[in-house]
Image (tube, rainbow, N blue to C red; front, side, top):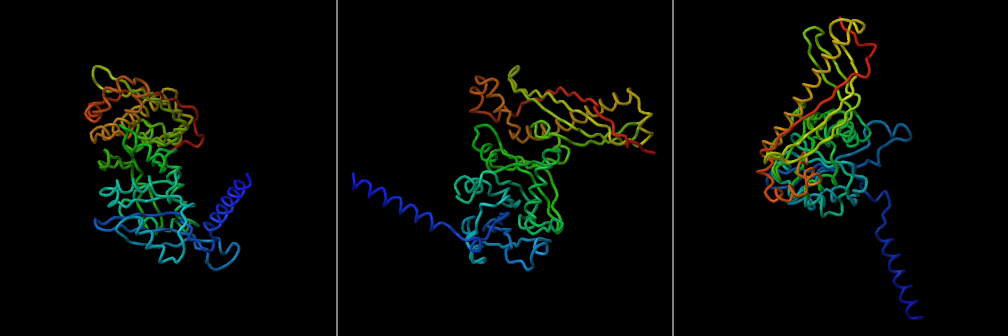
Length: 373
């Protein structure tokens, strides 16, 4: 018994010392806030955005403007590129604070499966890191000043988060991406951003067929895609009327329920969309001249616009045989027998899929400032 106690004590001591050896002082680490990954057909280049803990000044002065720095590294794969950047920084790179991973377009088009493998297996990867694709090079996104934000990478993540809820961008984390990738029938989709020197903007959603990028949804298709996916909570639409001119309509609440089934040998996705509206701006006339008939007409215009955007998004996905709308997964939940029958040969079944929509739009509010000429 005494020998057993000694053995346990020795094991505990070894574990304690092992824990101490893994600890690092903050000053010994390069804390990553964002990482860009580019591929030129031969080599991988990573750009890490790290906190600049050595920035001069104190107090408010030290926390004004950009408090990050960018460092690049190159290698035959991501791990080698990170090692190269580490050598330049002379400090261990710490990914525990990382907010976003940006894939360059070259990487997204030609090297995606290697990225997925990195996200699956690397100890540096975290499940809540956001993922996006740069319209050109990922390094340009990392180098953007984002209007002198303290941490530009954080500003980009906020853009994607707000954008998804508002109908103009997607917000995908590492965990969600891997779930889509590992699902038998689902395909992945990733938001695309465009970088300028001073700011980053949204440039659509890239949709995939297995590991192949097949298309990038435009602004209107992105709106429809997010609505069909029940990701969008609020939004804005411009509607044209012969009598009222240009009309601005806020979607103050949106909810979508989808139901997949097999009907007459075809896969059908039924979407029930409910949108509560607020009249925001009217080009011709004043708000007190708008009648109930006007509002009903605008509601119908909004309904048709929503149907158009959703149909456009659905068509692009189906033509590319991309199930990023997760129709197969929906079918598995609703009709498991049909799913089992079709899932082994899902792409041909998906190519003939149809969308049926029931859209309910009602005005709930009228902005008192909604007046034009």
